[in-house]
Image 1 (cartoon, rainbow, N blue to C red):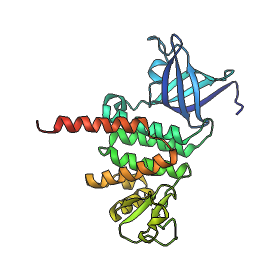
Image 2: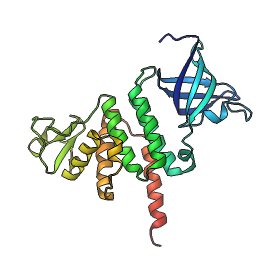
Image 3: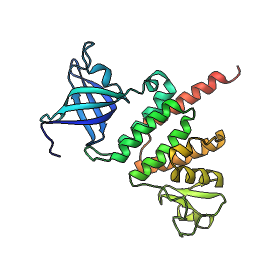
Length: 260
């Protein structure tokens, strides 16, 4: 995509890696250009003005210069640091999950303002809402919808009949709920309770301003997480590194809390 010699955009830092002796290679999701890579020259020098604006998860206004192969970040002005996401290991892990999920569902230089706003909002929700699991599930469903993989939760994906309030099955391959009569349409479909389907529908069709008041039992949270990760893993055809790390954190926390 052709750009001006210099261009601006608000952006969120998805990834950053050391590059050369003092630079950083950034993967950014921009509001105006989608996902791009850029070099922040000298960003690892303590005296650099860019240093405080290119940490992971930060949202800033950036000025870029078009390079031969990659954009050069020339100026940065902070919009929202999301500091709490780097101060708490659990929050860091969940933020990393949101970012990794977006990274896997997007391609470079494909603008999508809805996805950008979703990520910006979700990082904020993580910092000020005590139920990170609820944030994660809401974000997953919204991102899937924006990326073209919205799961069908109201009608059987095989026969088309309306889903009744009873235990059902979820098919990753077919992209939604199978009624009991059609469960054999996908032998790998997983069982899912009526309660879980009801909550998923609520998350899929209500705004965060309404959803945030939900208080769910841990058993329901666990089932929702299992269903969503089952579907996401099928769509992406891979496991996510941040999910593996989150599970490791939970195992370690359980060991610390268990009686000797």
